[in-house]
Amino acid sequence: MLPERNASSMPVDAFDAQRGRVVEYESDRGLGTLVSVDRTGRDGTAYLFHCTEIVDGNREIANGVDVTFRVGAVGPGRWEATDVRSIAGT
Image (cartoon, rainbow, N blue to C red):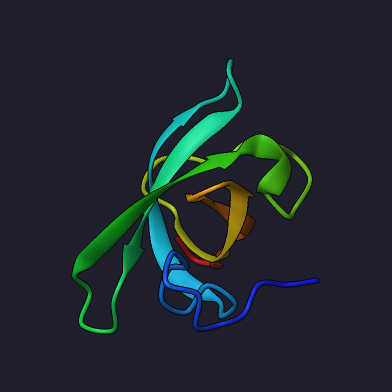
């Protein structure tokens, strides 16, 4: 069962797709960091992600690529990017 949307520890819009940009990706470890981007283009919250969350299945993504993603719980109070999708043309 999914947590309630108004849970105090949940990031805003955790269930909604967000836009962001990959700022770091270590292919040898399969770990990366992306930063959410708000509607004005300003950087927001940084989220970690694992290569298994890259939707196209190739487990590689370049730094600077614009993406859409969702936020998912990976432990008590820990949130990471899930469902990471590259936006065409970046």
